[in-house]
Length: 249
Image 1: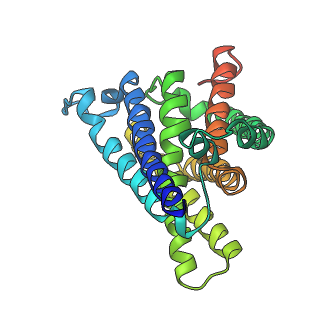
Image 2 (image 1 turned 180 degrees about the vertical axis):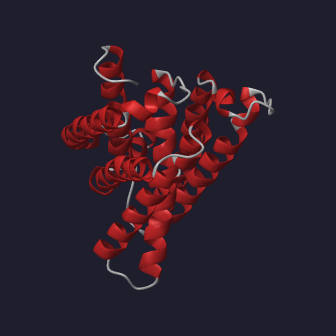
């Protein structure tokens, strides 16, 4: 009986990896709806599909990294794990929904404030039209696999290995992953605006760092699914505000 239980747990763990890899690939595929080639220098012509290779590799590596280090730190994907084990999955989902919804609203407000505060500069920049499917797919799922499931998990495992307490290890890992997540937005910013003012760089960092810390907290408290729901929900709310004409999207 014990051997059978261990084998079943091992099989579910492998299926969790496959599920994360599949979710990551699906998330990257939604980038195909975004005209990424428009932010390239005029002399460079690369098919859009080629531009998906790098984010696909990064997402896959982070999906694998998170899965490999997850048992060392105690964070989890409770809804997915329950689904894969044919167990009750709605309870862990319901536990995280109120907090995820609250964070989504707060982050959407942060995005609105950021959009209003940078409107003068943004309107003078070339525009990258990011459709809702990409915001939900790559933003809500792909970026969470990279920043929380992959980086935060690995950083926390490393901090624990160096003797940090669980609380200190989590907050150090969460802060570092959030900072890298924020700095990761510089690539698109510099592609659209080669010489951004310092205040805009600070706004980009803060506008992404604060939400990322909140998503990391959701991951710790309720599982990666809550972070994904909050991230995607924030994008959906902001997109709705932009579609209604309240802000520039």
